[in-house]
Image (tube, rainbow, N blue to C red; front, top):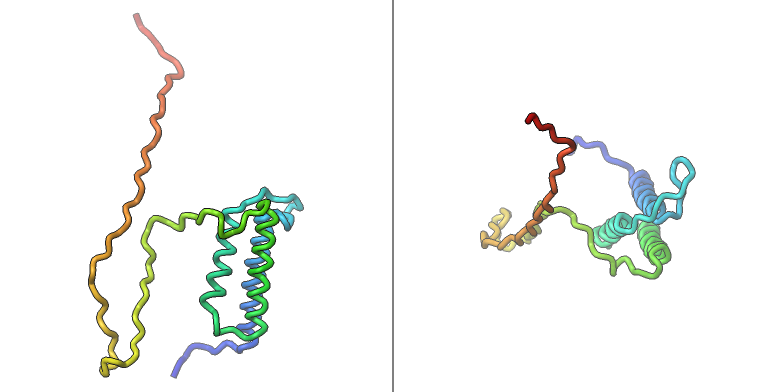
Length: 157
């Protein structure tokens, strides 16, 4: 018996819609389509807008088959509209043509776990193979040499 409070389905649908609309609003702001808090238009921020569009596309892929018809339509329309807004703001560059942002040098913390289909008959998870995966080498960044300039020089002699 679970002690977690159950959230009504209607409230979950409302929260999902708010999440999608907030992402879309943030994308439009980054594309210069919405004014900032003081009423000024922010500078165009294409890499950041692409990252948020990528997040909406990830949400679309991860929730496929788990949404109501209305939720799916909202998400699909939002992704399409944000892609079109990106193309217009970037002068015809598709989001898929933009370089992907560097999401960090650390390896992804989640690994795909095999689903226990009960084939072993024990109901226990099967051990994962311990094959060593070569990690990609991180690019070395050499700092540029900085010329040290003295502001003044005192001589006693």
